Every structure is written in C-alpha cells, then in structure tokens.
Length: 339
Image (cartoon, rainbow, N blue to C red):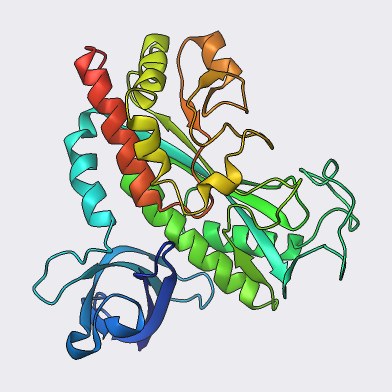
C-alpha cells in the first residue's frame, strides 16, 4: 500500500513568511525524497524560471490522517541545489554546529490569537468584551474561547512526537499559547513550524482563523509574542554565565540588530506597556516582565539556569531568533572563558 506525505515549507512572503503544503503519494517502503513546486506562486521565483526544490528536513507522524502517513517539513532549494534566499534554516545550521559544544537549548512560548471573521474569537459583534483581567489561564465560557481547538491541537502535536511542554489561555480573549522545548536550536525551530502548521490546519476544521499578528487589537490589549527561553551548558551551571549572556545581548548594536529581526511590527507590541520593554531600549532583570530579558527568580536563587528573551514577536522566524541568540551569547561566553 501507499502512504501520504504532506510536504510543508516556508514561502517567500514578506515581511512575514507563510506556510504552504501539498500532498504526495509515496510507495510503501520508500522514503520521502526531493520534490518540486511553483515558486512563482509562493514569492520564491519569477514566472520565467519558476521551479524550486523541496528538500525534506524533518519528518514526523501525521496526526490528522493517522496510519503510516507523515508530515515532511522541507527546506527550499534552488534547482542547482543551493539554499534559496528565503531558506533561513540553512543559515542556522552552521551556527548550531559551530557552537554545539555549548549544548544550547531553547524553549519557545508561541502566543497566537483566534479570529472569527474580522474579530477575535470572544469579542462581541460591534463592540469589546470586558477589560483584561480574568482571561489569563481562566476557566468558563464567559472568559475562555476556542478551548476545543486548543485541546485538539495539543493532542495532535503530542501524537506527532513534537516536544510540546504546555498550553495556556493568554491575557486577551481568544488568545492562547503553547510551548515547544526544551530542545536544540534546529529541533525547536523545526518543531515550532510544524506545530504552527498543525494549529492552522486544526482551526480550519472549526471555521476559525489563527493570526500571529503581534498586536491583533490596537489599544489597551496585550500583544502576542514568542518569548524565547535559552540556556547553554555553562548557564545551567553558573550564574556568572547567566549575567554574561544578558550583558552580551545588550552590548553595542546588538539590541537593535536583534529586534529588527524579531518579527514584523515589533514596535507596535514593544511599547513599554502590557508586560513589554520599549523596542529601542535594552534591559534585563530578575523576575521582571517589563524587561527585555528576564532572569527567572528561581535562576537567581539556584545560581544557574536559563534566561527569557521577551522581545520576539509571535510572528518571528524561529530559525532567525535561535541563530541570533546562539551566535551572540555563545561567542560572548567563549570570549569571557565561560564556555
């Protein structure tokens, strides 16, 4: 018998890439191999030379179709075998390899918002719900919207073998979060993209859309981020390495270099309000959700652990944010002798 392979890839849409996918029938016993697609329809090629190549990078069970069917996350290549310019995974891989001795580990908190037509799920037609306060980790049909979708998504991620570590309702109605990790930079990025695809696909079955817009509702409402938790071997053993990593992220032009690559629309979300630091100011602190980078209280107590970069947007490319953090922090740890 044959099985079905759902080929998933990241397109060239700017400023925020979209996910695409299509299905291939594969002979039993055969592995998913390279495949082609029309790059002129995904902002990855011109019409006169439209062929682009899908190279399998991460394969997991398909929790929607079940059976022997699989999901195949792919890198996009040019026809000569080189990485397409939209292929940010290819930029992360050598950085991940170069600093492998540090054993960098990430946990990414993916916030997102359900929409029913043109309004967030739970917002009344033509108006606004009660102010924020009871929605975060809430319970009850008057404050929680979309739980069925969230639960099914969680189940599917676990069935696919993804490293999902938790879910919770967020501060705004219709806003939720799931966490991926702790795993390495390539693993967390691959799995986050697949988890995003499963989220879109699951919500589709309910006639609900999902947005990673960092500020889906203007005004006095929380935005949506992708808080990025990070540690190395040394940080998991030494508080001095924790401080060194925080200092490195704030050195020279690094804050702006990172922020401009942390997702489109970041200045709409990082205003200094709603548990954010201003986008153009860098700070770090213990237990401070208004800082750019938070050191959890238990990390200070234990003298070791991890840090949380709170700046990345919900729409951030995980291949980019993990590459930047690994490169910046691991380089600094090596320079200070804290490898």
